[in-house]
Every structure is written in structure tokens, then in C-alpha cells.
Length: 396
Image (cartoon, rainbow, N blue to C red; front, side, top):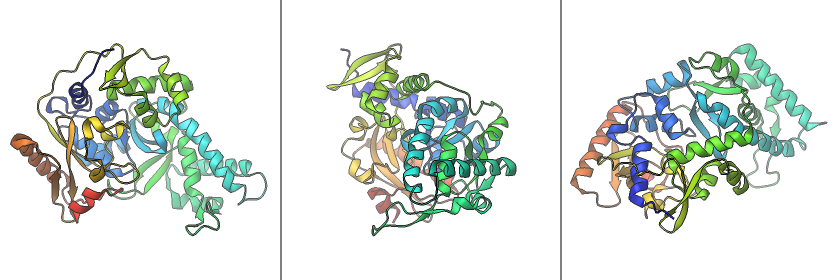
């Protein structure tokens, strides 16, 4: 079995994740395509991930791609997580991830709704969702509050933990919007605030995408197995070589589903320091060694979140940089490995701490990155949605 060293994996990461000076992009859509998807649970992550991989792109450039040109789209996908993806990838992700997710979420919601509404809960939920979608079609766009005012059933209260100390009845507005989004009927439009805002308007996907310069049929059919095979192939190009367990974790598929997806992909097994990894058979040549590089990546950036096994680039630094549920905070990278963390203080200052010695040249690159990030933020302060030990300490 051929061996792929840690150094070779780091070289592939550097170039394919566009983290070297020679691979920086000029369009947000190119970055999203290279990474397959940009984590968007925290709105600031999308913009900061683009900044780290581009020639001078600003938040306005990302907003233009999302809301004016509409060549990027927010959608719930892998592991029920929000991502920003290229429009051309929507049919693949819809069939491979979103449609099965919608079915699973519907089953979960119906379990609670059968205790909260009279009659046929499934028919009731379908009617509420249809009326909500129709309301959006008539309005063109609306906030969740506007929709719940127009469709009173959205304000139905459901208690998912009756009798528990943490019991808190909540309205089903978010449930219905999540289902409609997973089913490919609606999308998150422009936020009601700035680029760090988590409050969005909603719009019908068909009208939203129809205004894109690169329109994609919102319900263009793709067979599930075909879509999963293509998504696995794309992931391996960006994140391979890697063990199958990393792909299982990234997609949220079962082992059976993952093996079925890979059965139609031409892959070769390789040795990754005593672990067995997979690589595309037509992509086995080592990437050239990149020039020395350093990068400040944001919390939840798609690079560190692309693998379950992160030892080969993370080392012993996990406890300082991850929260208790597996979300990474802002990280500092040098030549394919994490060497520290950074944070933004309330006054806008960017501060960092190295967790290992990197030498004078790399430190100078890191200092230059800090200056670049400070200028890029301007007067905006963006606290990560998920706080990690080192980020909390540095920002205090």
C-alpha cells in the first residue's frame, strides 16, 4: 500500500484550500467551490473564510455574491448545519443531504405535534407549511415574524421536554421554515442587519434563483445515490486522502450510505501513518510543496472542520481551541498545521497566542495577517457564536 506522509497531506491542504499566496482567489464563488461548502452557522465565518483565501475581497463582495448576483446560496446541509454553497452545487446537496434531512426532521416534529394539535398532525403540518410557502410567494420575501403574523398556526406552542426543569414551550415557526428550506422551497435572503447579523428575510427559492446570472432549476431532480457519489468525489478532491470515518463525519451519513456512495468512485487505499485512507485514483500525485505561509482562520472555518481526525494538523492544541461540542474557535495556521489562536477584543484589536515556537519568519507573517484582519474588520466587532477557552481568554 502506498504511503502518504503528513507533509504531503499538509501540502495538499495548503494549495487546495487556497491558503498560499499563489492560490488566493478573486471571487467568493471560487472559494466556496474549492472548499465545497463554507460553514455559515456563524454569519461572520463565511466572510472571514473568504478573506483568508482571497486577494482583497471585502464583506461587500461576499454580500454581492450572496444577495445580488445570487451565485452563492445559504442552505442547511451536512450534519444539519448551515452552509454557503455555490448555486451549481445545490441540486447535488439537495438530493444527497437536504431531502433525507427534511424527512428525518418531519418525523421528529410530528412526534411532538401529535401531542399538541387535534386531528391528523401530518396533514395539519403539511397545510401550515403550504400556506407559509404560499404567503412567501405572494410577498416575495418576509421575516419569520411577518410570516407568523400572517399564518397564525406558526405561533403554535410545543413543549419538547414536558415536566423537565429545562422545559420551555416554543413556537413552531422555526420548524416549518427549516422544513421548507430543507425541501428546497425557500431560502434565507438578505439579513435585516449587517453582515454579522443572524436575522434573515426569507424568499421562495424558485424566484430567488431565477434572478441569478447562473440560474439553476430549484427542483432539478438528481437521484440520491448519484448525488452522494458526486459529493463524496468532490470531498475527496478537497480533503483527501482521508479515512472513510472522516467522510462519514463530514456528511453525517451512515457507514452503509457512505460505502455505497464510494462504491461508484474510483478510489485507491493509502497508508496514512498506520491508518488506512482513501484517495481518488486519478489524483495520487503529490502536490508541490508550497511556499511558506501563515493564515488566521475564523471560528468554524471549513478547513479544520473538514475532518474528524485532526491530529495530523492540530497536534495537542485541541483543548484550547475547541469548545466542548467540537466547534473550533479562531485558529492560526503555519505551513499546514495549527500553531495558535487569535481573537478580536471589544475595541477591535486583534490579539493572538502561539502554542508552539514557529520561528521569526512565521511570526512576522502572523503579525502581517493580524494587521490585515484589523484593517479588514474596520469598526465591526464579531464575537464567535461558539466561544472556546483560548478565544474567551484572549478577548477578555
